[in-house]
Image (cartoon, rainbow, N blue to C red):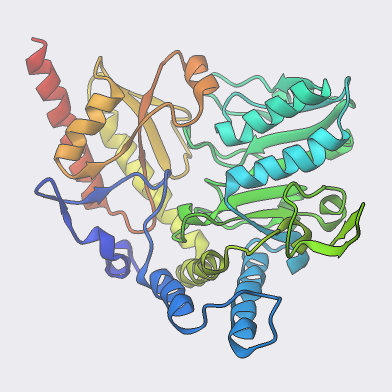
Length: 408
């Protein structure tokens, strides 16, 4: 099924914005939702809304089956060894903080090292920065290549026997590069370090096999992969998750509560205190069904084609600069146009019905490394088409012409 055929499943795409057909190119921020996901969540609320695990009545059992069934879908989607290694969170940010508080702050000490890069999203940067400050551990950065990518040579030079945790992106939300996770895992493990992978821009766009990658943690958000907002996944190897302490306490996650001490449930429920994100998990399960029917390899192939198609035309626009690797990019293009501020650029494009992102993309350290305050970003997904790329290119040319006339 091609992109044009897939669009029929996305109700939001069939509208006009500012008098023009919507061209949605802000998928890096959040993707749109197919009717299958919307209907799955609607069915939960209409037909079997109930809390999970605790009850023995019929609706509770159906809800529990739906919630835990979604966990199994996630397990299969990323090829984890067992469902117990899949923790539902509020999203990637929540997962990063869970490990930063439950592992890094609990076990690291002065002399230990946390290694990351300047490319990271704030969600995969600040929790480790603050954990280093709280524990006295050293916060280290892998030097970047000229195009902002991470080389294995730089990784080898940075990770030492003092490194306890490496936190790194799978796919950059700014540069669109794919990090060699499997090889970095080998290097980290040779030095006795754990590897935490931010897969927020990876899982929606490519086939993920956590056993092949051999990472210790992998996290992603449902809303970037055709699922609902407010739910995400933290994968961790069982032997590692067993060591991580929960950061939220209350109902559902406990085993036994005494006056002066308590014990926790087994994995994964010790991390899921309170009423969990039931409808969100069910929606994520429906999104996974949808994506797997299309095929993750097909999605990745389609997006790379769109990126290449767009970049070839963007390079012909005088004064347009593309940031990051110029070849073999994933699902997005980050750029600036002459002296036009990215916010102004995005505003003009919006007047033509084109939605792109403008700003620092929650990556201020990277913006400073690039020597810019902000950039524009066009990010693609399975329902975008070559025709929409053509509309974007036309919009960029009109924007350049408009500002050229204003300042001439």
